[in-house]
Image 1 (spheres, rainbow, N blue to C red):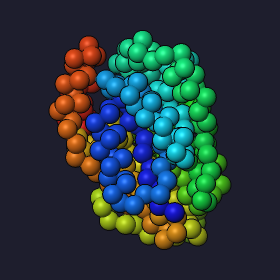
Image 2: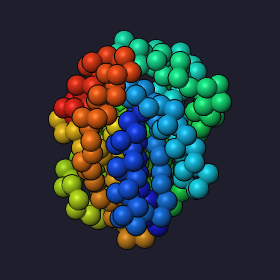
Image 3: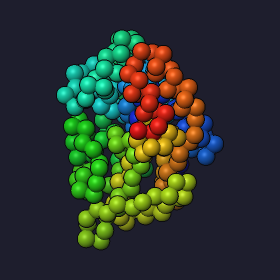
Length: 246
């Protein structure tokens, strides 16, 4: 099965739609949406309702820390993120909020674990920011493949014969063999707010039949998305991040 792995949409409808189109063009058979549908961007309602429709069509959908913060006070957010969440709360209906908080933190399918942050402790929102964090995540997941978001950058880690994790630098658009005799942890990147100084939206494709992973980048109208952030009265820094990929 070919999975499209999307995470960290953050209310960016333009980026979300661009990635969905790219995933369908690539022949994706199922979507795995790894959380953080709201926060930062100008279209939380449209994004949440799009996610609800996709879930009804069979998408795997998980909760991220920004989704969780809509209804539950978070101690993990900086002032900028907290300000965006407050704006999001004002736009979402009680039904939208209840939907986000009802989403699971972790799921398994096709010999893979799907989680927003880390399988080690999903509700603690741990960043997979290096081999040590990746190893703890893989051990907790207990399967060959773990796919996560949260970090806003694309990364891949694999287990050596000694069991320790090493980082692998992927090439965008190039299928990477990921045989199941190793453990792999993939950070799929951010659809709505990449932070590698490239504004193009990020997602990944996992082919469970061929055991390959392909990281993708999708250009979209990021300037329009940034302008909508400004028009919504959100911090200009959030618009600048979308424009610059910061």
